[in-house]
Image (tube, rainbow, N blue to C red; front, side, top):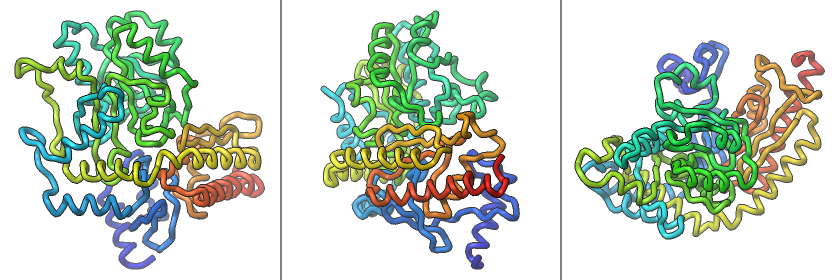
Length: 438
């Protein structure tokens, strides 16, 4: 290890606090954190000069690859003008352009208004507060509850955390947040009593990410839209992960011709280059905040509609057209499907694979189909082993998540799955031979 790298690691361990991380393990003397220093396309490079495929799009954000010249140029051009201006009491051209571009994705501009914030969690936070305030200002104050789905994940700010269905993440905070009821599926939602108290239902459309890439049944989303309309309940779609081509269409809801009342976007909004989020709403909801000043939506962020973020987002939307991103996806999705099947056929430890567009989960289980003991942390060990073969990704429990930039090639998908296969072999097949896995 060179002196510069040793200094970086020492400072990280002494001063940084990493998310979702057991810090005692991280700061242990024998642990050398992976220090990433550059990127090009789907590849990242560490401080030792080793290259890796970014198999989870830098936590599900990157769309077109790293250091894309068009994105870099758009950000640089805006940086030469101004890096940030307040959106409170002022505006700027790129925010106006981006809002209009986003509205064009939906028929008759049905999601006509966009409220900008900072990340996926705050996009959800905005939707929840808007939904509640709308009810208060339209004579429906009794509608103050929400419904979410078991094992869902919608962010970590207090309101968003209230919706979280993963007990390990959210149980200790639940009493401090919104009033939320949880259901497994549409049948349980239909059976709930007191639906007249529900302001909105929140769901990740088509696929739940943190729930080990759980794919919803086909048609479920359109049925949910019909039911919420019948009940006068707002439908809030969390497309923080699924938006911007991840499922094969620009937005997941378009696959079932669903237009929600609130659409929450982040991650891929700026192609993963800058933190920025958007909460899109129908005009009728926006109209509920008109009139007296006290009806205004008193919520905001210092970096709302940041010009650099808007520049990146507009350049990303341009790339979807110029690079024919959506048109090229069916062949990549098919190739990913074949790679998943080949992996399952050749490795009995692969209990199930799940796919939604360019989002995939590979669940590992024991030979009898039972899960591995959680203390073994098999998924984590396989991902660490795959790193040695040139792939970066993370598991959800023992499900290996593969969610690469959409710019990935078929050859790079094959390299990724070769690394996953070698990781499975190193941890499970070789581990059993060496009596390190029971």
